[in-house]
Length: 349
Image (cartoon, rainbow, N blue to C red; front, side):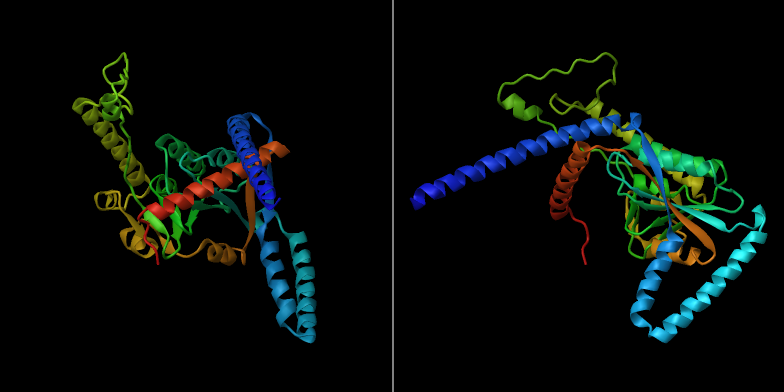
């Protein structure tokens, strides 16, 4: 009887495993389709006033650490200040309105998928921003990725520069390669002391299975029209001429990258920093890759003393299945990231 129950339990476990696997595949496929349709779907801009959030956190702490009499006196004083501020606001003209800081978060993956949201957020900000007074802050985190993806993301930030809107980019963790391509557009780059900065270089990795196929007498033909339509292949035989052409294309891309960075950071010694290396924040300041060492939290908290801070975010509308698909894909992405992190040579403390 015990053996029968054990076998039945193992059978149920197998069924559950198969069902979960199938559900994961279905949701992932649905999410891929959803991503492709995003540009056609409706979304909306969400705005949060960060000054109120900062004040809420501070008041929560005050109510815990201050005694009742001190707390009562504090809130009474704040109430009087609020009344006085309201009277002064009533007398203000348009020119007297406080500076506004608009905050955008960009978390980049290899495809720069967040560019679509960035486009919508910048469009919304440009419709209201005062170029003579306001500022845009981008909290940027990206290790880089596809050239065309980050080229477009950089072009979105260039829209702010073209409208002469002060742009500050904060890097708390990493802005490398395509990430730094975006960061160099800022009027001011701020980085945490150990943020990874730079990596102005280009890389391509291509596996080739030609010899394996040849060993098993499998032919794989690549037919092209145009001398350089296909320089390197995964399955076919790569030639030295094709390899040299591919390298030349990489070098040309690197040259364009260097010219782009030099245009927006003219004081950089581009030959020194465009070697594909990366540097931590402290070293990046010395090289001119970064202007100031500071976390984004400190920068925004300081700015909130004299300006109104608004976090701006474009959000796509999603149904339940789409949300589940996103959750499933994020879980898979996290597993891949953990696996790669174990294999990679990333420095660790």
